[in-house]
Amino acid sequence: MGNKLYVGNLAYSVTDQTLMDAFNQYGEVGSAKVIMDRESGRSKGFGFVEMIDSHDAAMAVDKLNGRNYDGRPMTVNEARPSVPRSSSGYGSGRNGQGY
Image (cartoon, rainbow, N blue to C red; front, side):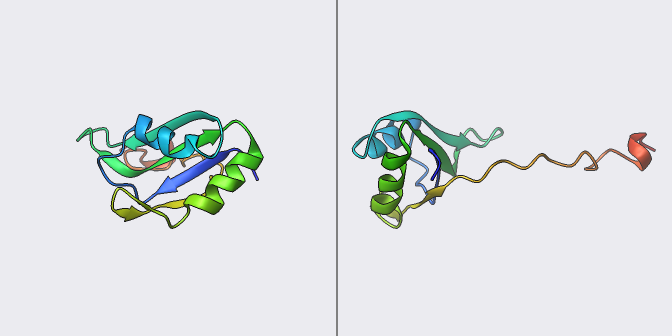
């Protein structure tokens, strides 16, 4: 198992620090980040935690997945690698030239 964990179904009141505190009891946390909405500045309800040791990461998944945290059952599992976004989104037009 890798060291980077996805943490979902978080209450909007959870901060980077409270997320780090929740995982610290299972080992040393390298970083904890709650993902925020750019426009509203409010939590999107998920984040990522990076544990220093992969054994500690596995234990955190085992102990925290499904556990009630701040009134909601957390989803905790190994984070998947990010997938690069396609450049053929809005505004690209034909062949990336626009209209």
